[in-house]
Image 1 (cartoon, protein in one colour):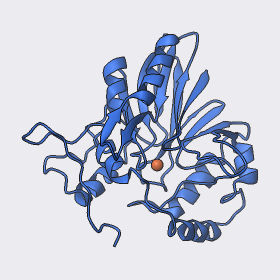
Image 2 (spheres, protein in one colour):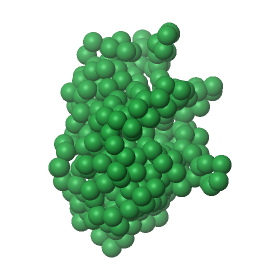
Image 3 (cartoon, rainbow, N blue to C red):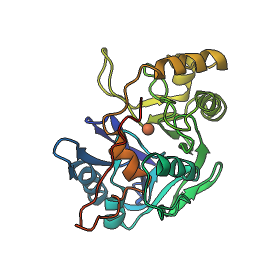
Length: 286
Ligand SMILES: [Fe+2]
């Protein structure tokens, strides 16, 4: 099994193609749809990189997996689904996220909050089979209530739960986020994986000392994670995470991302003039 990473500089997102070069079976994790908020324009450069890689390696993509409803980038899952015939999967607790944002954005009455916009909802401990590939779903809430990590022997894809050791962990201040839950997810679900498991993170922005990076190990995270090394007690982490989140700015593409991603990457239904609109809730943070 191999993992190819695709780094999106605009949002610091890492998308992955996980594949077997012999069987050609593959999944895609967290694909990006490029969105310019000033030009109000969607482009397909990031999705095209994924499609080119899949085509060059003649891969059969079974699933496009979202580790959660992202708040910093739009998903290109619908485009990839149309091109590749793959199914879109996300953690089952997306239903909570959908209900929350239906209220925040006053989405249309018939917007469903049962996750049915996705092809498959994944529960904790479930196995995701993709041809010869097999992943164990780990529900790792905290950043959002719906976050999942995917574990396969030797590797885990942690989305926004666990980042590079010198970067830390995902923020927990979005609606239904929970620093307490993130502590449990990391210490009980991720840090109990074999120490030599390779960790592929969902975001990185580089630091003053290095460029963007996305590969580490469970051992390195346990020993060196700057926010949550193994042995740090719950209260210390939760207090630190809450204090940190209190001074973080909202993501640049927050409103656009969330409204599209709770629809499994679809734009809102077109208005009478044929155009789709994204809302900005004025004063939301007051
Ligand atoms: Fe996220």
